[in-house]
Length: 396
Image (cartoon, rainbow, N blue to C red; front, top):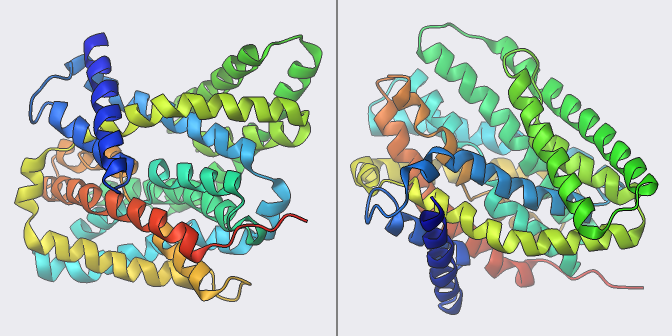
């Protein structure tokens, strides 16, 4: 396992650096390293690493979400409430409708199978989006209108909504009937995640003020609390819906709001350093999960469905910011930020196949293809557009 981790880190660092020098997003090189070293090509990654791949990817997401929460301000989130809420579900609904319209005639699947496919493709990738939004917050670009804050909040809620839809549709495809009551779980999971996360953040503020802790001690306690929130989500699964990742960000937000500024800045710097390694691990493991054979089986029709549904999704993303103070170029940036897919598709793309659904192989093929098409495309589009579409906040 240690050898495999070393190969992933070194390979991801090398190819990520090379991609950066070629003017490409670093994640392209990291995913390429994972694909090259993974079980479907050179097969140099130990199977035990792949077995815990989802947990390792989740740990990496926790690190960047903690940094995001420490960088956010509650006042900014209140200011962007309505469009952030719309971004949490409207683009996914539009993409689902696009897949429902395009997949049956182009791929020869039923409406129910198209709904399963649409729910897999519908989630935006926090792994691609969140680091870039954190970068915008630190750079002060777009922050005067709350653009990174809005996208951060919307993208975090988007995954909760899409995974609930996926669970409902797969249950229906297995003959379990429509369970639309599952949609009630979305607001419950959001509110419970926010509430428990805020309570945990308040408790940490008290602890940090009472105990004499060094910077590394605070970091370890904060990380442990985040992992416990995810463990709580897992423990309550099937009984009570809870968004652990949203709770993690809420905990960091409350901690940043109530702590001394020096504590917050120290923690942000520490998590920034941790992310340098976690990012490599995250995207190499996503790459290792990609089987190019499924991509080849998907064919041009699947590409047409993915791109067509993305176009429909973009209309939904554009509508989310209607009636706001954002200029057209800033609204366009929000559309681009909602293009990439990676982590959720890697996590649930193979589930329909494992459940024995007739559309399972097609869904997995389309999920792999969506990762390969949209993760680099979305990352490149955001990187290209940042300085062109967003203004740097003017300091007074």
